[in-house]
Length: 197
Ligand SMILES: Cc1cc2nc3c(=O)[nH]c(=O)nc-3n(C[C@H](O)[C@H](O)[C@H](O)COP(=O)(O)O)c2cc1C
Image (cartoon, rainbow, N blue to C red):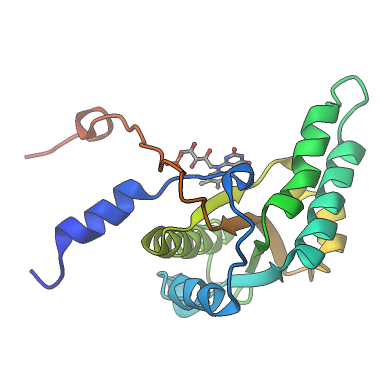
């Protein structure tokens, strides 16, 4: 055995989606964000296209305008009869509760060789690397999508090129001392596995 399997298992199982309303206001340092991204880019990538792109919003002066814009996009995209003020406020307030947001993007370079789904898969692996690394630091993290993510409005908000897609927003934050880390639940492997022995 090359590494501690029990340690990596612990990190994998302990990785939880933890939402911005639970974060403390302690600033996430740029150095930590660099570590998360440095691990993200070691995800597997078909054809070595390395399709992941990140845009970091650090500090409330950057996160607040971002989530306010996302809330406005939610409003724009939602028919009046479905619009929920509560949801609008929830989205908008995340930039106050969270001082570090990373926009997750995918850029297609080798369009003839690699199917788009595989570029998306590679970016998802990169996000998992970030999330596991955040877990190792004891940081809360949350991959958020929602219908805004794939909208024209987010395309212009992030100045996406035609070759780029937004795959969501990754929220990161320290947790207060009294925070109790949630336990997850999964179906047993018997449910998801068919064996040919
Ligand atoms: C691609 C992707 C998009 C997600 N988008 C959302 C989202 O928009 N809102 C949300 O509450 N959770 C979102 N999640 C987080 C899931 O809700 C979460 O992973 C799931 O509840 C399992 O919890 P865990 O991450 O703590 O194991 C997303 C997860 C993935 C992988």
